[in-house]
Structure formats: structure tokens, C-alpha cells
Image (tube, rainbow, N blue to C red):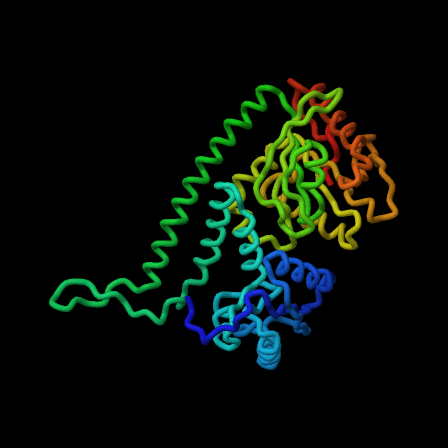
Length: 384
């Protein structure tokens, strides 16, 4: 899109820019960005830090810091400069002109990972829509090196559409097409959901921060073989399996995409059709990485996204996973009303899985007892 000088040859090297604006979780944010770029395929990187009170309107960083970033990129022979922040289109363009390298912000990196991981038709459509939403804000002057088309009446004709106008029209048309296809898939899923409701099958969705172990738990519960890896966003496409729970009968369990701090709104909007499985679930198993030092902050981030998609009112059970990496033992914790509020387990070793199955059976029994009567949230597990 932009005319640049010859780029370095190594596409697996990147300079990571992580400025401290006084956030309490700055160190965790730096570590998370490192994991993000490694998940995207970068294997060589260096981190450039610094402190600022506020971003620079033109370059996000100061001129001196920009020169430091340029030297680091040259020393590393890096193709990319990645910011652990969201950049405005103007800042991104100005940095690319100055650094002579591809500049990506946090949102762009997450979109790149999603594009690499999407496997199903719906997942690919959702990622493409999110990418176009993000791109549509960055078309300004992106094709400024091209002149207007010639057109109009007369012998020579006057200037016609600008290239940017053509690009906007093409992007807009593609986005409308993608939204139409996703709407068809959403209606199909709605029909499937109604069939489950008619059969009175308990619907459970696994939610949680990325890399909390949702897919490992999903495989352990359902004997599925979904990809589970120690990397961010290993799972994108929603997978649903039936599970037989003694004393409860058949339930349906869905593994969903993981959430992350500052999850791009374009992704939330694009994946809204998929996340409807979460909104309409009878129970959310909120999987938390018990070994993470920032598990409380991650739990808050997940709850913020659930609120954004309208799933904050769905009954929720906290599942503290990965206790094999902590001194914690398998166990169950109850709230003041006597309902199960938290289950401690290890999906990898299987310790505590029976406790979770018992908790699911309890919810299924209460759902059956409340059938035909108005649903009272107090009958279910307390939402955290």
C-alpha cells in the first residue's frame, strides 16, 4: 500500500515498542506482547521501552525514541516494528515513513494471528471482516502515489474517481457481502439452538482468557481432539460436543475463542455471531489460569468482554485450571447461598475433573427443577 525503501530480508524479526504510561500491569503487558508476536511467527525480537505521560500526536513516541527504534531495527535487521499500543492511521503512516519498515500496532498483530489460525469457513469470514474493518480506517492517502482515473465527457475527459474512492467502494462492497454470509450462518445456528432447547439439553460454553487451558479442559471433558497448544489464540473456531453427565443426562459443551486485554472491537463485532453461543448458554464455565500472577486482572478482562456481548447475565462458574503448577489442591468452594462458586482442577492431569462434572450435574438438576417456572438467577451459580 505504501511506497517504501527496500525492506530487510528477515520477516521473523521484530522490534517491540512498549511504553510505560503509568499502568500497573505494564510488565505483564510487555510479556503478553512477546507471546503475541511469537504466536504470529516472530522468533527474533528486542524490546524498546520508555516512559511518557501521553502519546505524541505525530509519532506516538518522541523523535529521539523514534531514532532509537530505527537503530534497533537496523541492528536486528528487523522487518517489523510492533507497538504494544493502538496507533492512529496518521501515526502509523508517519512511523513507516521515518523507520522505513512495516509498523504494526497491537490490534494488527492480533488480527494477523487470527488470520493464521482460522480454519473453518465461518472463522475465515469473520477474520476477513475484522481485517477490512481495521483497514477501512487506514485507506487515507494509502494510495496517494496513484493519480486519478481519467473519465467524464469531452474529448479528453476530466479527472474521475480517485484511487482511494475506488478502494473504499470495493472494501465496503466486500464487507457487505461478508456480513450477509455471516448472517446466513447465524440463522442456521439459531435453528440448531432451538432444536437443543426443544430437547431441553443443558448448553454450556467455555470462556476465559487466552491460553487459560479451555481447549485442554474441553478435550478432557468430551474426549475431543481439538488443538490445544501453549500459545495465544490456539483455538479460534467454536467447537461443540455432546457430553453425558451421570445424574444429569446429555449436555452440550462449546469451546469458544479466548479473550485478551484490549481485545479489538472489530474482532468482537465480527465474532458476534459465534459468540452468540455464549450469550444463549445456560452456564458459562469461566476457565482461569490459576498459575498466572495476574489472574484477577484476566478475570476482569473476560467479564468486560462478556458484558460487551451481552453475556454478563448468564450464570457463571469459575474453574481454576492448572493447579498442578501451584500449591493448590483440587476442591470446590461455595458461596454464601450454598451454591458452587469455584472448582479447582487440572485439565492436563485430570485432577478435580469429577468435581466439575458433579457441579455441572447440580446445575442441570436445578434447571430441571425450575422448568416451567420463571428463571431466578439465585437458583443458579452466582455470577462473578
